[in-house]
Image (cartoon, rainbow, N blue to C red; front, side, top):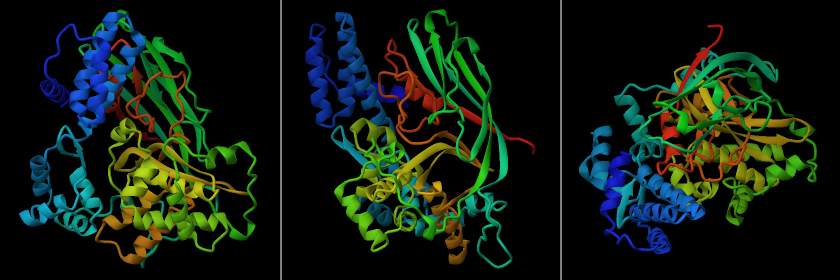
Length: 497
């Protein structure tokens, strides 16, 4: 896919004379980007990169290389023409007529972005249409015999009686520990890597948190490339490596094996015992401030005030915000790299469009809480529910006198995806994930947009989510950060089973 897009990009820009100055190419690239001609801008930025490198201006060369990456990432997330997207929709929903499919396109419900003079459709546009239209989702589930994967996968945690509902067990803050062996691996082919330079890699590892204990790195390979030990006792779990490429023979194969224990979490808060925040405390100031992606606008604050009404208890306010997000912000896959490239905060995008994935929903919940002075954050890692594993985010908010309380708006919402649950069952499942959390987790970061250490010096492909390796190499014209994110493979083994 990458090679096809790059070839298309070259074809969109007339050949520039060899003597065209680097600065002229750079200005042409910026103009093309401003005009949303992203493929053309990609080609021009890459030409400017080569020209600045030839002139010995490495700083400008690096800027152009990073800018080219941004353009490529936008195109990669929006690969389909309308015809291609329509074919995918017809394949997934064969019961829809041509007229019905056309209406979804004409009303803008098929996610798209206008660039290079036309609309290009998001790679997950069909899935998102289903998520945001439950009638379609339910029909798809019936035709494909899809039940309620999260509800079924968590049946041993949230017990369903003979009737209905999901009763919570007698209160204990941390119960039912689950231990996991997690093996991550990455291969970068020799063809992708430059012959010289240094490849810098940040591998994700589990960290110590409220509900996660004894995180350990059992092994890492090749060990000789490790420069900094794993940061398991900090807010972001990473293991840093540097690979001297001039001594590398063949493909680069990197792997890390870790183990951690995660507990089922149950936070019972008595609203009458909620204390007052110390509004001068560093932690309070940090988690009520504006962030990079947890951003709240005056409009968002007004919405939060409308949602909570006359309620002034921060715990009960958070519950009202939780219910609002679960019931009004449907899940949708997100063009994260595009938002990063265009400088659009995820919480703002969510507010303006009314949907988001687990990360975006958690950031939006956190932003609404912060707008009212409730400390909140979006925690990231992996979801390890049996049969449903992958990168995941959920939120936490602080309650004075109790500490951090979890709220997983995304897993809660999955109850709506199945046509086979009763309304009472769905409501009880949603209720559980306010203040409670299953043990099938791997916490890697305690908030979004935590800085990597050491500083990579440029934007990595998945800057918000470090569930994937972060990779940079200033000597490479290829987007190795994207290659690493796409090539990361994870195998999870529950221990003691």
